[in-house]
Amino acid sequence: MPCPPPNSSASPATAWWSWACGWRSSRLRVLLWYWGRRGGGAQFALSLARGLAAVPGTEVALSISREGDLAAGFAALGLPCDAVPTYSGAPGFLLGTARVPGLARRLARQARDFRADVVLSAMPHLWTPLVAPVLKRAGIAFVPVLHDAAPHPGDPALLWHWRLRRELAAARGAVVLSAAVERAIRAGAPALPLFRQPLGAHLPGPVPVGVEATHDFLFFGRVRAYKGLDLLRDAFALLRQTHPAATLRVVGEGDMERAAPGLSTLPGVTVEPRWVADAAIPPLVATARSLVLPYREASQSGVLPIALACGVPVVATPVGGLAEQVTDNETGLLAAAATPEALAAAMARMLDPATRARLARGALLRGAGLADWPAQAEMLLGGIRPWLGLVQRSGE
Image (cartoon, rainbow, N blue to C red; front, side, top):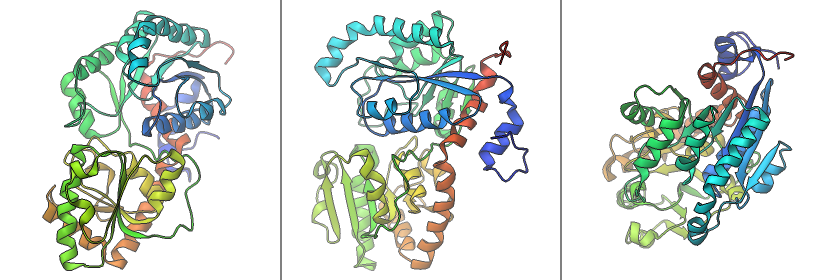
């Protein structure tokens, strides 16, 4: 694909970054590192790997977990790939930690043999702070994609900040996925170069079409205290007072009754406490007329761009990165505050058929760009390339 000028008909991300950064003057070798095993991080890494492989002038190699749920998907890309032994549970983590020094040397050796210009970490791993310093000592550029700048309330926080400091100290620069995370990282590491871009829609397959919507609202994701399921319970109870036919489906792994006592007894609510396989997430999201995110705190949401790509508008509280991911009154509606009353009011607005149809069109348009992973990858490479100090290789 030729490098387009700014007024090209190519996507804005592709056109602007190709023109402004001029980074195709030499080949770029990227070793994408992801040792996580499951969930949104794995889908993000796989989508990013596909996108990087599609960028002209870029060579990609992979370092992944042998125990990862998507190991076969990574292997199917046909890229140079090292599947390293990590772990599949808490006992395996404790025993596997003894192997970390050897695995760190193995990653550094792979980077040298591949002649990698950068080791790009798709998502931090519990072993990242032990491995990243080895890359720095070996003179290998390490760039992490930082999804969070602090532990979410209620999530495990042991050694969290120590791990982050170690990663930042070893990094050549970092990629962040929201302004909220960028501000927090800059406060702790003001000299570290940062590049911000939106979180893409990590779809494991084509956008589902022809799926019948069965509920007005869907809450989907792992159940955590900060996600405000109790706030949604109270908001939906208020909504039913004025819209008695409204329906809500709640799907996710975790103790929903503990998070929001009484939620399952509310009229119009369907509760499904279960893990959802990656391939089933887009069809699930497509069954909703809108996605609802009642979070009290957020870096950004991984399911939100998936919803937009499926043409499903979003109702969200105005916290953290959610306020950046939702363009209010274009791709969804932002509540005036993170309160049951404000969330109920926004949900009531979404129940208007004309409003919902207009926002669905906006969501689909925005989601198409977020699902364009070659453009997402090109934007990321354009952002980090100035940090790498590359020169034209002879013969390339």
